[in-house]
Image 1 (cartoon, one colour):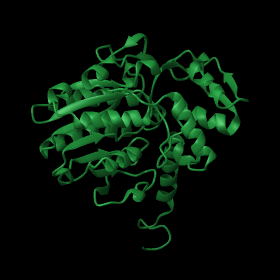
Image 2 (image 1 turned 135 degrees about the vertical axis):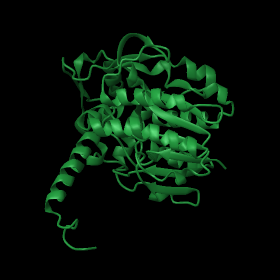
Image 3 (image 1 turned 30 degrees about the horizontal axis):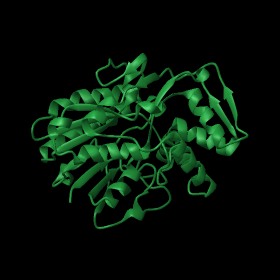
Image 4 (image 1 turned 45 degrees about the horizontal axis):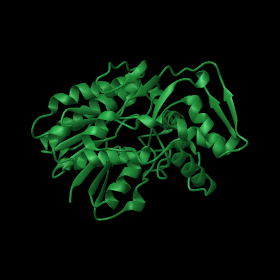
Length: 343
């Protein structure tokens, strides 16, 4: 039975990945700061170890007897990274390097970094793993820096792989995010019967379902031929799911008949990338199984059934601002590190 160390286990991808890996017979060490709450308690089992810690500074002994590291830990999107650029650098770049180095020291055989197609930035041509990168946000720049610094650690005993995910969508009940294009459109369509498109909607986005992302990590972890994946970058998604934003918006009219689509001419987000996903299919025989329609339906149904809500934790930037403000208030009113009484 393989032991998988998942950093960022409490996040949008990680919280569902932990359940998936446990269900498929792995032992999992679920490592996270758990800013969004202790959301894995329902998965309690002998095969799950939950660790609340930080990849920037933790005891490397926890990596003893780990077979593979999946590094999902990060300040999780472009706007959030701009809110806290120095912290993003510490976690997304230096923290990832620290985790990889300690993993190698402790004899872990595989390290897989969750990177992003946002490293491509903006381009007119179809982009593949050999294309020039032009990261725009702090988030994307730190992902690229992590790739560059970690690849040098790879050798015959330490296999390093980078998975550049497309824009992820789909239902994650333990830590839902409503700041990703499909997810936020689904929420607005369900709640207000209105979708907003910025910048005319001509921007390209490579989309990929959450379950297909998790499967890409599983295939990478299970690959026995290290030569196929060591020092390799794979874009994760499918050629068929490159869409312009306006095309995505109009998909929702199949499920919300009275939907209104508002188009604004300006867009503060300059990212525009159409991505090629041939490599992961050819090398790892990877194929996506879910479509945009699947994502829309599952989110709509979950909202209908009350399985998820749009509370503040689903809006990453807003929640980080809340935590920052709360910390500032508490630091002013606490006395000797206590609020009301000694506990």
